[in-house]
Image (tube, rainbow, N blue to C red; front, side, top):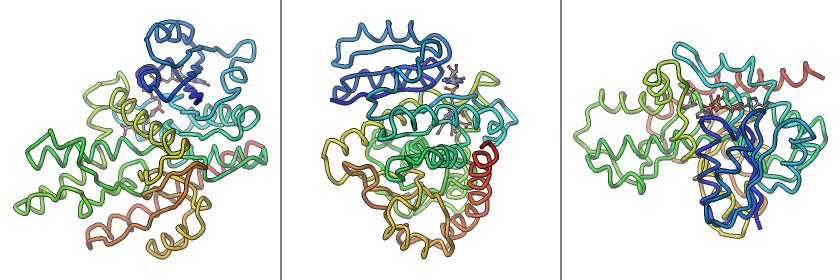
Length: 333
Ligand code: NAD
Ligand code: LMR
């Protein structure tokens, strides 16, 4: 029995994500919450012939408390998306408060739930959830995940395009580490399950790294003011949620990159910190998932000189983003 909840369920990501969760046979209950339109979305999805019982809630009448009651996994795509010319950090002003409010609801109603944060800027919103949970005395670092799966999905797609066979895309695995914005997105192409063509020029290699780091901008530009990635994000979010659900049901050996607290695995964090050359409170590395959430943080492994430089460039930005999230919560109490 798994109850999945989507907070921000009527939005561009929320609706297709809810559809994909409804299609997941492991989900037996699906709770949808938004400030608008969830009764309609829930009624629509409830006609699909899969096991999940669907219910939609709005803020009045304790809707947040009702949707979160009994939740096993909570996915948060609530908040505003980018428009052309904006960075993800420009969303902080609005999204920080939204995420903190929802985190407060989870802390008080479903403190044991696994929480998957999609709302941007992820590098800062994940610390906001953690700090809010700490204020309520319920923070379990193993249960909090920043969803960076879209970067992994993009890497698989773009690498298979360069190899010249898009049919490989579902099988191509590239670890993408660091965080989720611009230079903090670090694809480890040397560890791709499917090597890049040896004929690939240095310039083409650099362009591929850039495309993975700034893939979000490509969609924001193409949508021309109508938002950012929604469908690919819903796909990515549902993929990661499905992995967490399988892991908490006992499946072993599931590994995926995710932006997590380094408090989630002291031993793994020590090895990672050594590789990074400094302490960071949060980092996205390959995470082994288990019944309690994070089972093991994997080290980065062998990196090329170019990849080492990318990791080095990501660190100051991550430090700044993490501090911004932590400070926001500290200042608001
Ligand atoms: P959207 O505007 O289409 O949908 C957001 C939804 O959140 C809306 O339905 C809105 O009503 C709802 N909402 C706002 N405040 C709320 C609150 N307090 N409680 C519940 N719901 C609330 O936006 P979108 O395109 O779905 O994007 C959502 C967020 O996801 C953005 O911050 C975007 O930047 C982020 N995003 C992250 C990734 C990633 O890889 N992590 C990828 C794409 C988008
Ligand atoms: C993405 O990577 O597509 C998302 O983070 C949305 C954005 O703002 O680019």
